[in-house]
Length: 359
Image 1 (cartoon, rainbow, N blue to C red):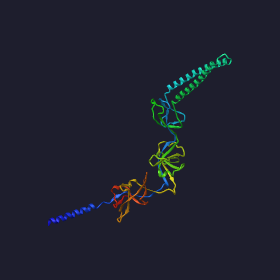
Image 2: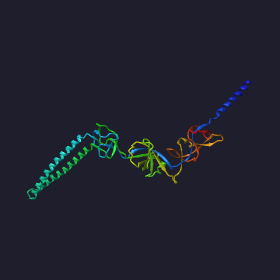
Image 3: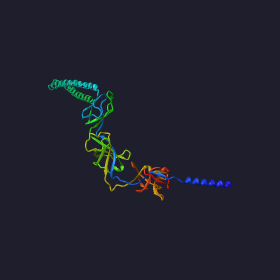
Image 4: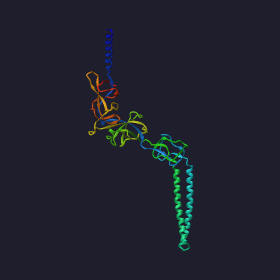
């Protein structure tokens, strides 16, 4: 009898434990209400300033970098010599070419005198035709040699001039890539030269925005380094191709020249877009709200239950569109004003009770 009572009590304990194990805690979840996205209104994009004209300067000839005249940030006028190479060898080549030219001029003068003398003798039948033609050939050869010598002088002079690196426009040295007394090869970048006080802005806009941007469109700009001052600019260039990041480049010119704006400054660019009646409205959800399995892509929506503050997770299969910076576009499966779970999908199943987290 005692054994029978013990068995019954044991079964009751196991049954109670099973009921406790089956009782599942209500999981708190993050959520988001789906709304239609529209291009219309104000949009802000991150940008950076850059020099409108910027060039890597290099020498056309090689040699030892003797001196750089300007320091970083110093103003340089167009045509000023920024740096120069040791030009001793090139000066010697110029002198050799000029000496060769002088010898050729002497030879030409002698050949011309000889030709004039033979020409007179030939006219009086005192010289043969062969002597005349020989003197003429020597004279023509001397003239050709002089032209070659003049070209050599010019080439040597150009090589000498190339040892001077000049500013292509008004600007400043923004980066120095070589040091004095270093051997520099022809075409090797020596410094970066940027236009001064003539700055433009570069930014990237997503694919659903680019078609709404127009050349000449006015924008407002704020720079982190300048404070609360607002600058005005206009869209000057619109990129029509992308490198694969689903964003397109824009170039914006400031309407005025501002000395306080330097290349490399971060800024925010505010653009205003009007409502386009022909533009489609997109449903976009965070990428973390989408789960994947053998059945395809799906999300969990929230449905009210009979209990206060408790919701039921409902699995819904969706058809995904493009992946944007804001998340996935939804082509099919969801409606505006649906509420979805945005985190912890691995713990979810269809019909699970959850409660909402406000933060």
